Length: 196
Ligand code: URA
Image (cartoon, rainbow, N blue to C red; front, side):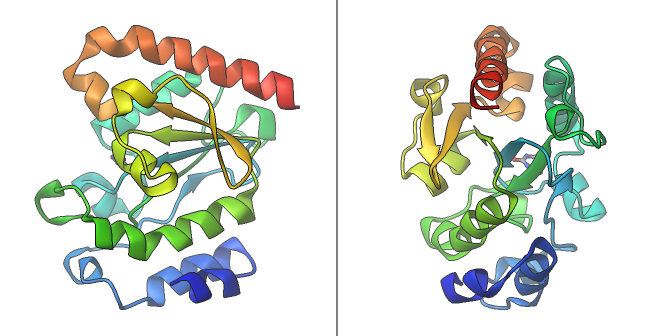
């Protein structure tokens, strides 16, 4: 997948390469490839885990309950998927472009297979700031897990500032953790100001 990913010279070519890639069994069980949503010119790129049922049906990331919370979180710092201005927009993708059976976590091999596509995706979008949403995004791109420890501390992915944050699906179960997320969203806002 590394060679296929590097061959893709723009987002449409990357989407095509991923759609045509037959090496991952998960493709067979999924209804749609879930590539991305939002504005690819946005200065912030959010990387989630994998599509759920709603996303698999629609072919768009983050549209179920967790996605609706994600939209509210980013609206609170003035960001929407629809905005045409880079500084008001956001761009969303996932580590895994296909839904997993019973929404299980992806295996290490499955992540390793798909991560060159995510890295290429980042390189083509070149956002100013990356948000790593939850454990799987951190595992894939940092090689680390333990999101409650990792969250809130800046790191880098592809030489771009990246902040691990709690996944909105986690916040739906643990609303008491929303204060941490608010702190992290403010840190994202501050970083965007700093790097622009
Ligand atoms: N959770 C994710 O991480 N991504 C989605 O697209 C939907 C739910």
